[in-house]
Image (cartoon, rainbow, N blue to C red):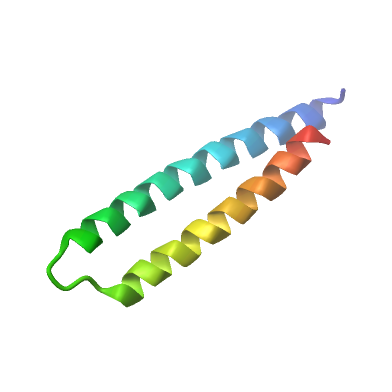
Length: 67
């Protein structure tokens, strides 16, 4: 296994961890927003859309790590 391949996998694993953290942060924001008397549903949808994109990116990165 070449040096560049190891660096690439390490970077991908770091990216996955970062995206998982962002998902956690967004889920917390969603839960806090839902507790408000008048939640901003546009904001809730925005955060959910970002979570979906983060999950898609995680899946792509995982496939690259496995190859």
